[in-house]
Amino acid sequence: MKKLVNSMTGFGQVQEKIDQTTISMEVKTVNHRFLDCAFKMPREFLVLEDEMKKKVRQYLSRGRAEIFINMTGEGISSKSIQVNWELLDQYLNALDCIKKNRPVSGDIEIEELLQLEGIFIENEEVDLDENLKEKVLSVLENVLQKVHLMRQEEGKTLKKDVLNRIDEVKRLTLQLKEQINTIQNEYRVKIKERIEEHLTDVHFDESRIVQEVAILADKADITEEITRLLSHIEQVEDAMRLSQPIGRRLDFIAQELLRETNTIGSKSNNVQISKIVVALKSEIEKIKEQVQNIE
Image 1 (cartoon, rainbow, N blue to C red):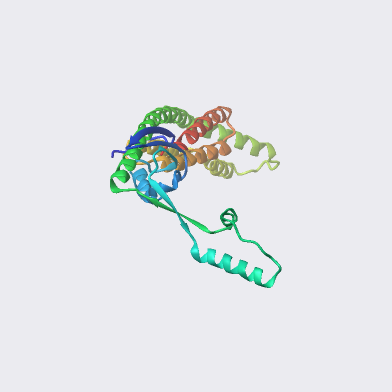
Image 2 (cartoon, rainbow, N blue to C red):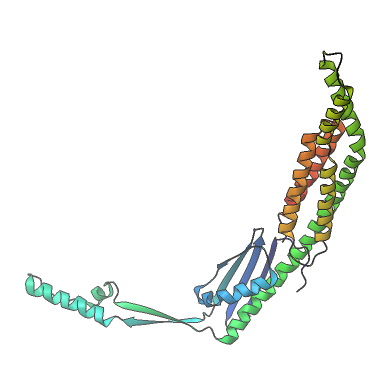
């Protein structure tokens, strides 16, 4: 099945009658780092758990899936009662010994026998034939299809929102790029002025000052960070075109976007740059929050 940008949040519910038994099945999924399945169902269906997990993996790659199964009507198991004769004989022999060795008289009644622990053994046989197995798995598939459709629909919304926000991140990054030369020139002038203010020796080396200013200005250069930001933005756009789960990849890229933005913020004291950095961080945080729910 073709993979799209899917959300990890989904819900599906199906009720189907199988002979004299009604099976109600509900599946809900939420975000999770890996695929995790939790079943709440009658013990008769425990033998199907592995096959059910295989079915879930056909539709889901990540997320916590909770599968609830309820059964009403005619059951698929039969119970029988057996007498534990060996244990009963031990009880009776023990009673005989008590009568022989202690001044105790009287006969034990059937009501008293019923109170003896372990006298009766309850056996339960599950009649889960191949036909019923297939039907139960078919019901699960119907539910998973509903879940998958819901995750797809929400995934479209998430994709649209993330792409809109990444467009805004790109716009803000290009604004930063336009400011690079202006910022560097401003930075050189400020550093030079501060150095000259603190110089007491009239015979200072002008070329040495220019060299030191250039070194300090290079340390404040944000060109590399902007280049990496644009690269990460392109990676997000490329990931959105992939036909496989991309949630973890997007989460990593979002962290890298935030890291580069923080570096730019720490390098510059320019008011305009600070404003752009704040706006960038706001958009990236929102992207990071959204991709947490992408499969």
